[in-house]
Amino acid sequence: MVYTPQNILITGGCGFIGSNFIRYLLGNYNQITVVNVDKLTYAGNILSLKDISERYENRYFFYKEDITNSDSIFKIMERHNIDTIVNFAAESHVDRSILNPEIFLTTNTLGTLRLLEVARNFWGNDNNVRFHHISTDEVYGSLKDHGKFLESSCYKPSSPYSASKAGADHFVYSYYKTFNLPVTITNSSNNYGPYQFPEKLIPLTIINCLNHKNIPIYGKGENIRNWLFVEDHCEGIDLVIRRGKVGESYNIASNDELKNINLVRRICKILDEIKPSKKVKSYSELISFVEDRPGHDYRYALSFDKVKKLGWTPKTSMKKGLQKTVLWYVENENWWKSILNQEYIEFYKKWYGGKNQGE
Ligand code: NAD
Ligand code: TYD
Image (tube, rainbow, N blue to C red):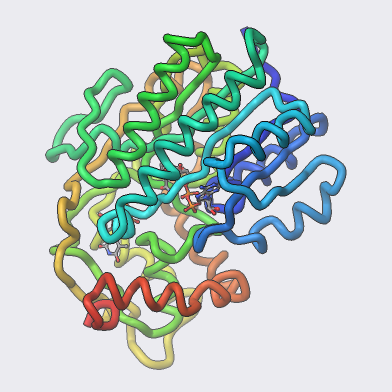
């Protein structure tokens, strides 16, 4: 049976993937109303949807609100007759979860539980509704050189971030089993693309190159990640909401696996071509090996055969996706320059124990 969402509540819509998903929904469906609830933490950026709020003023609504604030969320659901929740809101950076774990429990786990409870109260026994939860491959833990995680793999999270996401996933499933809430979950691999906060490896590398700052590589740069272009991810989420089986989870990923050092070298090479530096011969001269991240997962890789059976496959090659992403950051300095503020500087001071990045 195909489910058709109409009035969708997106949480964390001012973040990286949420803003891309809102753009995707409003661009592809004429009948949908999107309500975006975002607390606007350091990672939320109202600028990411400025054009959208102007273009779709009758179908796009924004509320600055915390997902743990159940009363407000309930009222918003009532006001807009919400039939579908897509829960992106989270603290999403592993390094920050090492410095300050508690907010990860509060937003990622408690926040998800509170949303589930609001949804259950608001929807009652209505089955023609959907709670879709966005999760990560990191809940499965780390792999050695071979094999991929399946949806049936055991959860073995390594970081406070992945532990908080794992807890949330379990609560979502428990609401399906215990209360019959119609839920679906997607676990995706590392995303990249426009509007990603420059604390994650790809945008951090691009921005540090453009600012002629060191590119910090943890350990030897041999850790492997499974990269997915964000627009492909959005298409996958939409498909699972419409065609996924209630109570099931689906992995979403690509076959692109890269060692961090090779990924960073590729980014440097693209920038050498499209925006050659006047200070260094190649941006790769900025690479600096720094102390490893504590508990650093060696490799993530997902099997995505299950979502393929629903009709999804990634369309964007890593070559094309990286080119597009690098170009976007080169052309959108206004978007990322405003982020490099005091809070941003303070985080890196703390993370590097008072030293600059990569020193
Ligand atoms: P992000 O950090 O860019 O955005 C998170 C958004 O959530 C921000 O706009 C922030 O303001 C908002 N937010 C934080 N706490 C909130 C709260 N208490 N109430 C309301 N809003 C709040 O994150 P992202 O990279 O877009 O990730 C989105 C989701 O996808 C997360 O659940 C993350 O775990 C998951 N995910 C991310 C990746 C990835 O590679 N980025 C991969 C797999 C899964
Ligand atoms: P990140 O983008 O933080 O995503 P995640 O940890 O959720 O996979 O990191 C991607 C990889 O890059 C990971 O192996 C850690 C590594 N990394 C660095 O080497 N240097 C950095 O400055 C950052 C932020 C990450």
